[in-house]
Length: 337
Image (tube, rainbow, N blue to C red):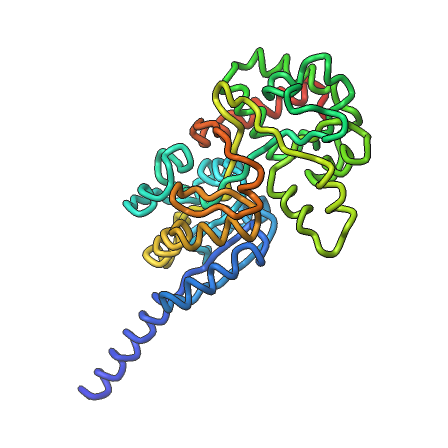
């Protein structure tokens, strides 16, 4: 009986160890942008990673519906606005980690510890080099001036990146000024918004507008596109300008992650987040998707370096989420399609 009891105990602890040696990840980022890092994590720690990828909003709905029964330990998504939605939905847990706090500046993580930035993306002003001189550009606010009438390409108001940009303007300038800016920006659009960020850059390159608003990593992916020479050509005819360098700095956002409220493997989940912000992981992130590290000690890719250094807005990104609803209303009132 004793031997049988011992065997049962051994099997029990083996099963516990097996369960404890994994971490389950829901990711709104494409598999190619996260799985290589998860594989490295497994190789270094022995902790198996189980990855589910889908649209971020779909995964958030899934997390809410699954509740306590969710298998997810970590939720990864892009844009602080989406991370804020996850926080408000009550699906994330607050965590304390000296490693996370040391690696990630305070404005790039949730004040209550529910999410942390993994990479930065800057929303720059791209201009056609044959039609616009950089000295003609200055700030996001200046895009509302009459000199840019029917010369701007930007995607629709349903896009979270634009919602966060307007949310940052509300934080910096107030609701009234943000509304006036949005009203005038709509009048300065060269065409009704359509397509993604790459499409705005392509349109400017094709002469449909002189200026495009886009996240810089799209520009990087166009410049290095080996399958479509037309994208390379379009990107090469454009250049990026960093706005608001004499004031608060250029608008940045993040991809980020949090540990789920009902994580079954919270210790492993924290180990994964800490791994994702170490210098080696940060360097890989920056190189593979032409993003900026959140860690100030991590290296930046040579292509990204070629765009020049810039001062970024240090607004705590939690505010982008808090201002999201007002930003959407502001854009709707302006007739931003």
